[in-house]
Image (cartoon, rainbow, N blue to C red; front, side, top):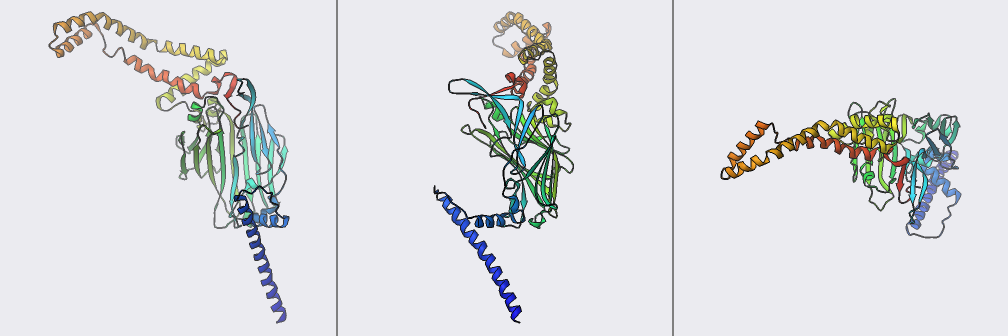
Length: 465
């Protein structure tokens, strides 16, 4: 009996000590939070024992992955260089080798700067894992991964043991895309068994690249394509939100005027997602914040994802080569204007650029070609105007002769028109028919990066650098 009593007493005492320790940690954490909220400038030193208890409370069995050193491995090819961060195991930035920015200082002196995408320090690429820990979730942004580079492949692995790990693999080829795979294994040791999904949260702050940001703001948005449907997008101005959960999602794209970062589903694909966008005013260095929250099945502490990540220019032919409608990211305009741009003006321009190379020469020749194609309409317009001018004296005589009967004037005027083959609409109708074609030039010149001189993007300050 004495032995049983001692065992029970020790158990109760042990439980009480654990409870007291957790309570102490919570009180100290609250105290630290309160001091921070009070804006104190005094440095706060947290004892290692308390810090370890706080980490254990938040990360549970993954607490060993919550501390480490940050390293920045790279992968590169002829068109871009990708820098990764071992904290979070994610892309830190992407340098485009064929594009640049120009920084104009207060003395109007231009300086050539490298052009980075997906580089904002506020960006996030994280898996939100539902847990039974004190915080209720663990973000891979807070975990340290071990990188392993082999040729054109990088593996980021955060491992507790051989059966409990998070692995992200990146493989690049010769183009602007990345083959990406993620595996979450054995996370049942920390996972909340009542939640059956894990979330991939991507937050991308689209930075200013152009000195004149009017068009850039209008063409910065989040576009997506649902399987079997035409692509759609969130509002280009202001804030917007869309829940996609009825059909699989083919791709999601974060696009600005000349570049895009797109996520192309593969294998099981994206079953559901929540897309959000938030616009900023001109006082901000960011044009817009776009967020994609992709839900993945999470069962038995395991989840997997396979996709391509495209990070590069809005090149219609390049995007079209993926054969999934990704070329819709290039905003050539809607309705008839977009159709004219995609299938008439763009092919002609591509043909001319293949011969001459210089964009200015191509634009001049394109204008002359379109003018020649529209000549029949212009000729009819001029001919109708000439006939109307020739008949004006006769019409004036009718107006004097029949000045008291306006209806009869109209009847006699129409007789003259019919006799000499004059169409009353011949002057304005050809002009109206030409207008959509000339109006189509505006969006195509605004969104095509090849129209930017020497592929330089002008800024009055080095945004995002």
